[in-house]
Image (cartoon, rainbow, N blue to C red):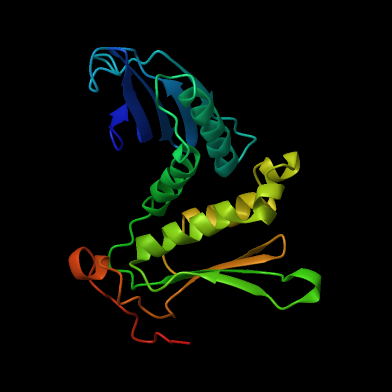
Length: 229
């Protein structure tokens, strides 16, 4: 069901399963920067979670104009996870991680990146006790995949997790809003800085020749000015 549109909402992730003959499920969706999380209809198959006109059982909407989209998405994610634990056999130990990654994947494809050269993603954060900077990076990847890795690095950064606990940073116009907006709408290389962390997409880096995707799914498109470490 992921990728479908239901009542104008694009489904970012769904989970449906059967328990004792009853099928139950949850969904996470987005429309124009607003987010929704809800329960599907209970039914008799994997395909009857929504009614003929896209009806669902119930849902909560996150569309406040005072909050930026990244915060609205986080609130919807938390509700989606909560609902998954109430629906029949929908939640497991990897659910929370995969649900967050589905949002990052969705955002990475919002801006078409066809024709953009391969990129790498990088996060640089301060070391502990006065030590040097700590770097986390990806290999060279197709542009959309590199952007997905950038958004995952941002999601996992403790400094940004802490910013989401600050009500002022969850408001439109905040520093957190600015970096997420720039990352989501990036159409190529980008350099971002917030809370002592630096994030970037660049045309520089090395390829991972062991990655099977380069043999079966991806075609290399390095930038002519690519630099390697």
